[in-house]
Length: 293
Image (cartoon, rainbow, N blue to C red):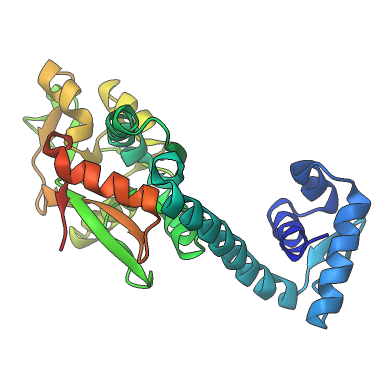
């Protein structure tokens, strides 16, 4: 059993919370996972897991080691893809992660254009909240992130391109004449959403604490706003169709609209296939991306 397999076994136990869950994900027996954990603990020289009831859990040392394991596995996969991409960039792989709104609004058009020009490149996409996608880049689990501005603690990455994005408050047309932010019900995105964090900042700066309804996604909050359940802060580009149709209107609020451009961020050293993507975006300005640097 290779070191990578042992590291993957530890990471899967950390993610699933059980040997059985890890075995199911890796399509191996539970005894194989237990053996991998025992060997890995012996190599490291400290216990990485211990018994907890009928199962196991990571020790503090195991939790810390699993963080490095994720980076090692991600960097190894990135190295393999970089080597293959250097030899044949037109037949490489690009691993994307995008925040939810970007995944719905930007990724489909971008990938359709890129794949038409480079059909041999395989594109893998993970869509999730802001708090999930940036750690994936740090751990080298993805090559490209499409999201808002990178957090200050994300190192060794490169902003490749930006695209305009404006956040506005929207609601039903009937709210426009007498809109009161403090009395409205605010439709809130899922935990970890960057838009949710921005909304919280706006309301805090206004020193108001209105009623809130938490929904699970960008699509859910927009549908709820159309249905008249409340108001929300969204990307103007993402609701252009509803605004043009008159189903929603922009509502006036101090501090808005907000300029929050989208960013394409890569590892500091790109794979050959990722370089093809960046060149494609620069050559196709109709996709709305401006190169940085």
